[in-house]
Image 1 (spheres, one colour):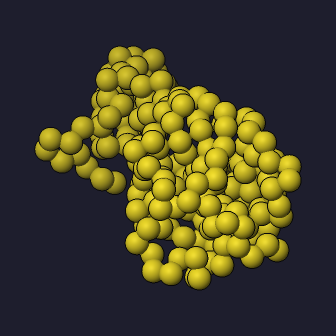
Image 2: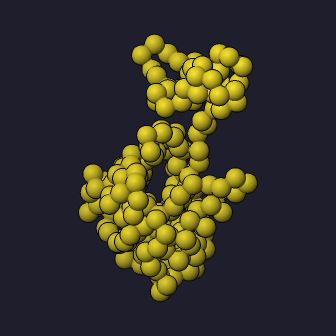
Length: 193
C-alpha cells in the first residue's frame, strides 16, 4: 500500500468523512487511495480504474477524434473509448465503447501505450490507467456520434492541437504518436481489413 508522503494528500479526503459501514464521522485517509474508520476499523479503497482509447486512422491517415458530450471536460476533444466494465477485458471494453459511441466495429487492435490519467467527476477524483490501441475498423459507412460524444472529426496528426483535449492522457498519447518513428509504416493505418 502506498502510504501518504509529506505534502501529498488523498484527493478525496474532503468528500469522504462518514464510514459506509458504521455511519460514524470517523473516516480518515490511510493512503492516496484508501480510507479507514477509527470507530469500526472498516477500510475501503478507490482503486485505479482501467479505460481503453481507440486510435483510429482513416484511409487518408487522419486520426479520428471526438467531442465530449458530458463532463468532465464537456465540449473538449477526446479519443473514442471508455471504462472497462467488471469482468471485461480492456480489448472487449474498447470494442464495446467504440460501437456505443460511433457505431463502428473494430476488426483489429494493436497495443500502442498506456498513460495515467485523473478523472474528476462530481468532485471525486478517480485515478485511471488508459490503454491506447491502434484500431482498424470494418468501415466508416455507419459512423455517427452517439452516447457520450457530440461530434467527431478526422484530423491530420500533425494538425491536432492537443490543447483542445480536455484530459491529460490523450495529450500524452498525441506526444507519443508524434515522436514514434515511422508510426504509419509500423501500423499501416490505411490498410482496410
